[in-house]
Image (cartoon, rainbow over all chains, first blue to last red; front, side):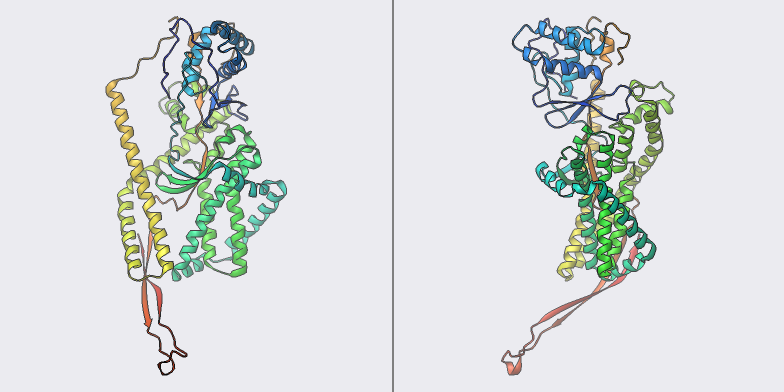
Length: 447
Length: 82
């Protein structure tokens, strides 16, 4: 959260009427939310979205409606006009001084408006818990838009009916009648087929991401960039679909499920090629893609399953509720304001999520941490082995296979190094804050 | 904050209001299997390379000559699971 350039609550007069940040946009209601009072959304110039309670949004809207008064009349008179409009919308009186209070303490620090002294706010990115931090955009928005447009027709009802039927038939036939054991045996006998399995598994991931982008476009909003990165310790591909907050619940869930839907279509394609060629290693790829789908639907880390639950309950960030729910459930403290703001059913589902998923998540993360030394040693051993095999006169395909495998082994080690760096930095910041003591809370006017 | 029966807002009530920058929605897929249990399987191949020098052709003229070639044959020799 940014620090205000200067607070003018205690100043006698505002310099200027605060305005909506240049490039920001009033989006409107966050549809299908799990909050008792439907929140409103504002889009910032950097395409981040801010959720505001109704009264704060009314203040922003009133400031925007009266922007023509900025610089033309006495700011106090302009503020009174804003306060009058907010009072009418809110059904209770608010003063010009209170509007300034909300601007300087609540809105400008989020980057929504300028400060009352005319200073521009700093735009800061939220610190997303267990988010994808280390990433590189490969396709810009314009390219994602075109790519999404090529495939968005697959979300029409007719196309989906055919696709679901094809996926069902493919899965039943492959998993019910074909022998994956034989396919594994043949893949081991022909090391070049490992390259093909790797390549197709990666192609499936890329197609998965295209599915998210296509669903986003079909639902009526622009998908963002696509790229790759390291998620915790694993190499990953990603699509930025932050704009999907503008959609209703159905559109958001369609976007979330678009990825596994496209995995299913990929499976149908693989099955058709297998039917034509009888090439056994393709069965390994089919199995791999099935595992990808299962892994994606897990609601622990920020995979598709997490976002599906988040959108079903209409709460954008479930991880924010871990602390208040654990405090209430385990420490028997009173429910804090964040929980009271939720409707009853979403609150129950989030509580269930926290109490079941968080132990699983803690176990998974502990397992990774405990296995770190073993992972480093075994990965280094495999890299040496692959390097020796390559140096012993392997053919070009074997070299490429070895190279790809080495890359997939190095990336988790790089991810570990980056995680360790972040952990050390976090500990240092915490230690410094502890030594300095908490910053004093600014007093409320009239207190 | 409901304002159904209120006439005015207090600063203390307004101070409880809070907005939130929503986290970016980044849907991702892992490019490798999410191992965490440390299980790996290594396959070591035994490879044999054969070099054939070729021939110089009919009476050394190059007619019907065969070029040199190398063939590599690999079989899985050791499979190690750990």
